[in-house]
Length: 162
Image 1 (spheres, one colour):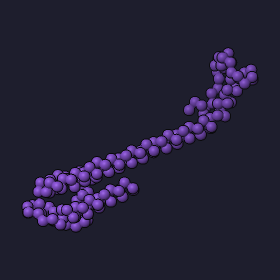
Image 2 (tube, one colour):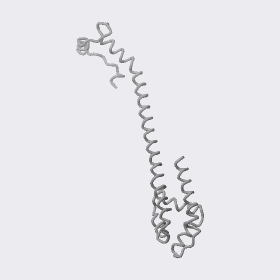
Image 3 (cartoon, helix red, strand yellow):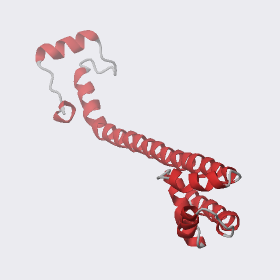
Image 4 (cartoon, one colour):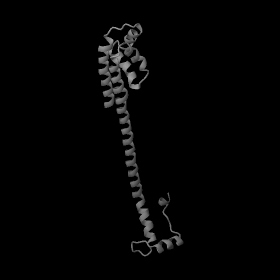
């Protein structure tokens, strides 16, 4: 939301500057004058035309004829390309990547919570199995108790087999 608002504000500022330096100036070449009349005749049309710079969508057809007649406009279009096409789009990309990382982190946390719940459910079965292995009843399982239980056919609870 904030990056979209920043993008709209940036396009608005550049549209205002474009209205002053491009739309209000007379153009000698008829093709360039037609281009200006089409793309720079009102603030909404200027903003819509500058949206092309966000995607770098056929922008050379827009800025090349204007810069060819007025080289000083290269500062306007150069800063527009740098600010909108590169900087703001990198900001948007960074926000998307940050959201993906945050989502993955939440997935890991949920997985840990799920594993903890599963272990809590299995705990009684594990405790019962170890108690059945402890033939001496001293609270410790010795290797000979494990071997004896294996020979006798130790019963593993079905919850632990899954």
